[in-house]
Amino acid sequence: MNTGSISADLQWDPYQRPDLPQFDERRLSRVGVIDVGSNSVRLVVFDGAARSPAYFYNEKLMCGLGSSLSTSGILNPEGRVRAINAIQRFKHLAMAMGIPEMTAVATAAVREAKDGVDFCQEVYETTGQKIWIIDGREEARISAQGILLGWPGSYGLVCDLGGSSMELAEINNGEVGRRVTSRLGPLKLMEIDGGRAARAKFVRETIEKLALEMGPQHNRLFLVGGSWRALARIDMIRTDYPLMVLHEYRMDALSVRKTLNFIKKNTNSKLQYVSSLSDARFSLVPFAGEVLEVILDVFEPKDIAVSSYGLREGILYEQMSDDIRARDPLIEACKVSEKNDARVPGMGKSLNKFVAPLFPNASMELLRLIKAACMLHDVSWRAHPDYRAEVCFDNATRANLGGLKHSERIFLGLALMHRYKTKRDDEAFAPLIALLDQDQIKNAGILGKAMRLGAMMWISDNVQHAKIKWDPQSLKLTLRLKKSSQALFGEVASARLDSLAASLGGKANHMIDE
Image 1 (cartoon, helix red, strand yellow):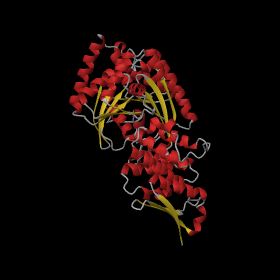
Image 2 (spheres, helix red, strand yellow; image 1 turned 90 degrees about the horizontal axis):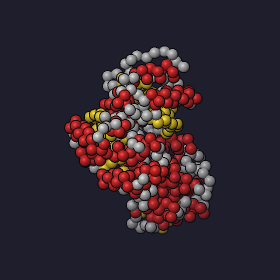
Image 3 (spheres, helix red, strand yellow; image 1 turned 120 degrees about the vertical axis):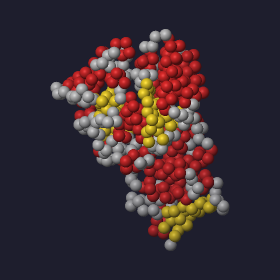
């Protein structure tokens, strides 16, 4: 217990921010963040790749600090006790994980409540944890930085919906621009007298005012927040979407409206059961839907992307050096995975050189995926041989990887499956593979079989022993081996070479260089 005191001025704003130094990769390997929201209190511990962090630990408690705030002016007393107990637990967990200091932030409920500062003081006296109160514009900025963590250089409108507020932020070419805040959180809307008609009027007037400040925003709409993710999960259920990964899930205005109608037509108990949403979260979804409908009407975005990254990831981004921020989150995550789990770390670079001649006209997007696949080609070797291909597919499609569209996840999974297995189980994976076009399916097969062959052409010294050449005119695939390494080319390698050639629609041969 800490019985000290803290200043009443806890505001985190553009002119007074906590001293968060920009860390290098080593210091960013274990970072703890506590998010004290209007609805939930959550601890996230980031670990692993600094630019594409792994979630070492993630725990939340639905405290409802902001419930009844509009009428009482103070934090929910029961929620306040639960929040303090949760933070005390989080502090003990952090010490056990070797994290001496964490960054804790509070958003709309605490900044609006009469007893918000008093609550922060009690938390400090009870747990020793200082909480920074973020104003609405800063919350918008930091949440937008969370988007930039996963989508470097992205552009569009970030919409962060919390329990008691909603923030909008403009991002363009990797920079955060205009930001606004509002009282459009579901907990606030629940307390408006007059029912749906009164809420609709309030929502419409508020969003139209926000639009005047933000200006035209017709690019991508990024949705941040638990209520948005809950709505997206129900959209997945309605459409029978095969990949239940919320991050980077895409919707459009028509799909959102169909899902809201779907919610109205289905009984709450049935829909809540199939969506696996808690009572507290499920109760907020209809109010979130009312807000989203108007946002789509007013801003008319070209498409919608759901983000699992937001405020907490934005705080991590705040602590990154410019060098780390400029890196590709996918490639950085793959580097760490290869370093930690591959039998020959660094071999992915050589494998990438080996397969490159098969893709002479590949786009930058495809070259990026090829590089990632090569680094991941051996990270699942510990899996049982009978299931290794399926494990590779599952890991790639569901792993915490930033900067990946769903189709790209499936491409990676399919390529890595073919790294260990010539033929795929179309019945089991058909719904997912259906998200790819025929060129993507073909390229994934070629890449996987090329990695399957190339993996046999190296030993532990990581020296390149073979090169491959594809002639699309003669449809001839040639494997060239050094004379000193010809023993590497046995019956299994020959069969893999033939399989690769067949996927290219050609014939194979091999040559020994003197």
